[in-house]
Image (cartoon, rainbow, N blue to C red; front, side):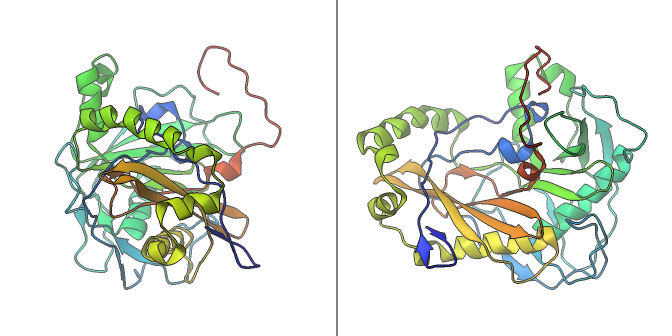
Length: 338
């Protein structure tokens, strides 16, 4: 339910079927969220570690002098399709990683002189990943895309992190190769291309069932939601149907708050539950992820945390929705650039 100043109020829950991961250049990270499907494995809960000592570029674009959360997300119960795992740091000391940085073959925009170099942006992204997920990406490959969408009030450097190199150009025309490229993604991030301000971040793609099985279940999931008139229920009715109250999802709310603290570089942040996404489990529809909203300064962060029942998902934090130009009218000229 969504908590407001006067008590607790449930907002309308929107549940969607599983969708496949698109190419990096297709959309903003914050608006290309993975939706969750079916049953049982449990991701290891994250833990709060001592704060790192070095400064980093925080949400305001300046150097954060406050203590930040460093969060480790262990994924022992989820299998990344590529078998790859990012390296978790053992000591609370940040070491600048050695990275292989390459511009994406899907680059459409001209990179202006005012933008930082993609190498500098990749290093800011590496620190962003360290602070939020507690993982070093030393020795890894970072695919970089510069974005200058007219609908947005800022430009972006966006990065995809993989443990190995891929022939990205060939993968554009080969479905099997494209699936392997997408499955190998460990982290994704988006920062302001000029200031380095942190915008969006996403963990690796986590799933415990083959992609084909998840796709096959998606239609059954949608039918189950139609049968119970899911979209005709108000939020309170949906929670009652699921047998869930706020206490049942307290651990996921805590994880969302830790993510917000690590992103913004501030402790003790809280917000409100805005959504619970559902999936089709062994006993019918069940919670698959929470959507939690935290506002810090003038930035709203939308945070997605998968539940212990989620068969597929990722942890994500998005603030790029704050950058839409009010009243902007999209015109499709065929370029697909928005």
